[in-house]
Image 1 (cartoon, rainbow, N blue to C red):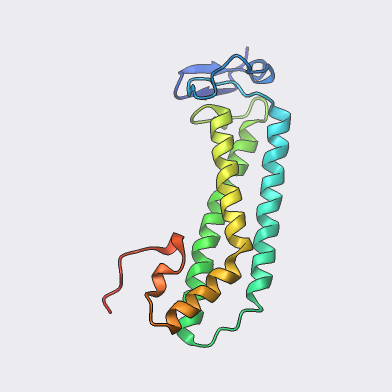
Image 2: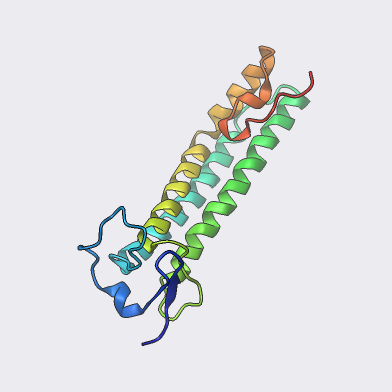
Length: 167
């Protein structure tokens, strides 16, 4: 049998044949389970999530063009939010692509934990980022309102929470 990928948690090589069998007997909370339930379906899920993430980013960017930015500081804040979300999008895309590539037989890419768990985590991360893209115009509007009200601008978006600036 050819080595397909290794699970670092179980220290066992998992072959393509192992991946194709169902994993109905494995405990879903067991991180040592290194076989995947349905590789074809999971590959389709990953591809769909990647497409949805890219579509959400495009739609969010279009919606942002309709948000009126009254000041230079508001424009700066909008750019910060966009930059942070773009970085998170790149990470989510990378995770989805990595999982999708690991599902290819004889791939040199492997899973770090159980395949189902890592794929589930990548899908959840992509869904979260896609939802933030869908709501980015509200996030930016809220940041502008917070700035206008004199509130700390960095608290407007959960992913941008940092220590308060020295104002």
